[in-house]
Length: 381
Image (cartoon, rainbow, N blue to C red; front, side, top):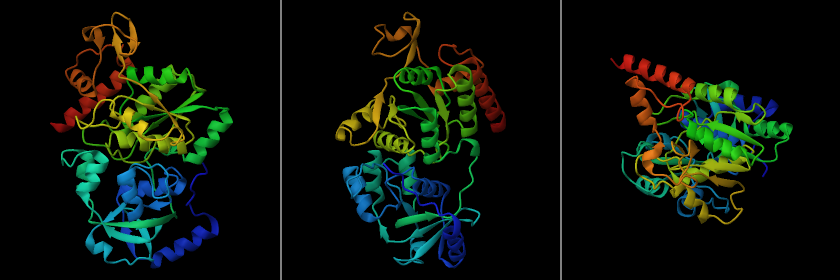
């Protein structure tokens, strides 16, 4: 599929930068600015702007856009009633970042109200305000602005070295001669179970795109700079250098579980992936989703419809009797023989300065996380 390209360059950009000074404007959140860039660079292909009412309704009810293309997460621009009243349909609206720098122009096709609880129930399967994604939706303004966008300036990114557009990664894949590439979505530091799953996938594809999210994540998640360092350590020491790409994805975590698994797969297809790893409780939080709901949702789409092949993995652990990393699919032994640590348990052990098995976490990663949690504990005092 050809990528959407709404990035203005040359004379068109210069003309837009002059005109945007006269447009009505809205200061968009960091998350909406990141979405605008991904729309413009093709990361959200086939979307070419913030969703209109018809597309939003179709996404909520059918997990497809109104044109029939698969899409599961609302990409919307919420504003409050006062701000919405400053625009009329047909206006060109400047989208500003928090420094009042113009990032994009929204060609406003429609402004409309929506039901936040309905959005929450459809996307997150709950209306519980304790769910971080639901809380985000409830914090939005009461109006949505829909329409195509044009990008006039690039937002700044904390990891510019790894901030690569879909077209850039596609070219890199072609230059490397990879015909098959698997995408790996992550918001956590890399553990041995992740490594096991990635290397299993690498046995059947040519390369892997490690693609961590560096947008908003919920309170308690390890910050992006620590996560990126963990990927650098493991990839540079334990992976063949010609078999991986590391790039960041500047978008927010939605914690939408099954729907977000489809969304993550579609985005990675746009970045050139032919396959996508879906693990246990993908994009989940708390107990809102079943451990393999994110696997089953793929059955709700026709074969080949998504344009990317999911690779399903169960939770990996180290089995003392097998003497290897494995999953329930290949290990016959009791749970008492397994070493498996959650991120919460790892944090507790590190703060208590207790040893963590190298079978679960690489020593270099344990050291990195230990320093992070120790420094964080000191700051809290």
